[in-house]
Image 1 (cartoon, rainbow, N blue to C red):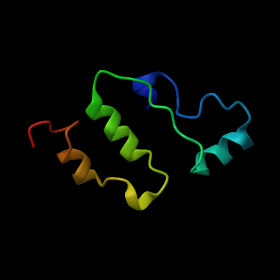
Image 2 (image 1 turned 120 degrees about the vertical axis):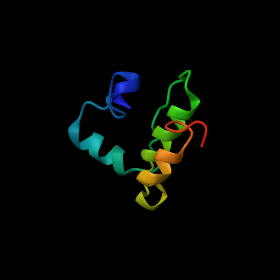
Image 3 (image 1 turned 30 degrees about the vertical axis):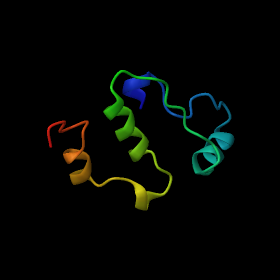
Image 4 (image 1 turned 90 degrees about the horizontal axis):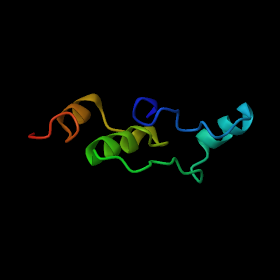
Length: 71
């Protein structure tokens, strides 16, 4: 996320305690500004799922459209 957008996902929250609360709050949406590579944004969204069970595995990421567009 930071490599793509130049800042971490919760950069706008200055207070450290508020940032920690936002990270665990499923109602706090992570912003994904428009980017020309839609597969990259989809991969970031998948990796930043709050529910760890919903996050892709390394093999799934490697076979996904961002890493392997012809797979």
